[in-house]
Figure 1 (tube, one colour):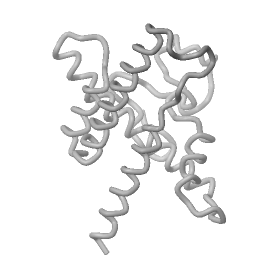
Figure 2 (spheres, helix red, strand yellow):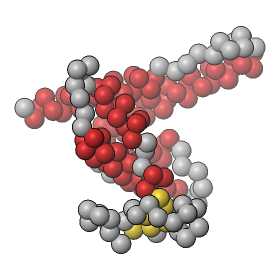
Figure 3 (tube, one colour):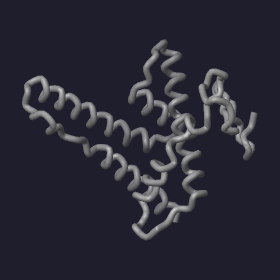
Figure 4 (cartoon, rainbow, N blue to C red):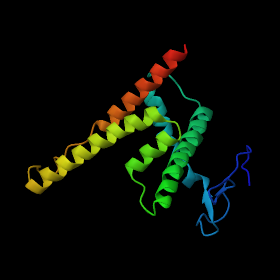
Amino acid sequence: MTDKIGIDSYREGHKYDFGGGGDGSGEDGFIKEQDRLLPIANVGRIMKQILPPNAKVSKEATETMQECVSEFISFVTGEASDKCHREKRKTVNGDDICWALATLGFDNYAEQLKRYLQRYREQEGERANQHSAGNVPEGKEETSTYRGELHSSLSLGRFERCKSIW
């Protein structure tokens, strides 16, 4: 089965429903397009964060990016899931995602994600210790800034790669 632009819509045993018909229950084995894709508002917001304030993003660009990032996530997650299946595990963890990124040739992203994951785990350990010791007042939990650091470092890496091409 192919969608309206010729993309193979059977992936790893999943059938995608691009027509929007049916009751959407998923009982017939089809995954609705809206369940397969990241929310377009979130994709647009992420795209706009990297652009200058006066820049505009077309609907076509946002929809294209929505397809790309959703497929990328499925691609990496599928590789990590295959590894877990071979190892007879049911849970995909952060290390599996890092392994999949490196295996698929995204070494720069894998290294950045490994560093993020290490800092995240350290922070979670510290947070658990604070809670067990009762040192954090209720409603005063710290929030992580590592996600922003990951985004910034990946953006910088993307800039450096583009700069080397020029």
